[in-house]
Length: 161
Image (cartoon, rainbow, N blue to C red; front, top):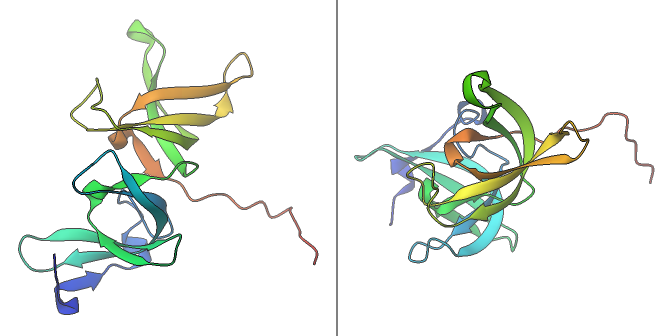
């Protein structure tokens, strides 16, 4: 696809906070022809709105090799190690409830999810531990249950040079 820059408008950082892959999010870019094949990894530099019909969003990604790519959402996944929030079901039967917790992406499963229509799902490690003090790992997490969470910076850590 070829667009003139006048057809694309960069969204402000605060406008991207509630979309799937906001500015500074770590992503993997997948191949258009082979959706299960990651071709590069990088960071979202900006989100662009195509103003001509059909209206669409595009992500400008800086890859780890320094190249800049313009891609659509269907080619993006959260990168392994990316900090996220995940919404998941706790308990069984009538005691079930939805809970949101901080986690980290462990990996992507590039086969259709058994719980939805998505062509992939995530493995997620929750930052909280279970009752047995072991890490909780969720399997087949639907992409709609995952949202980006900026990594927290510990103000107590001081590095002297």
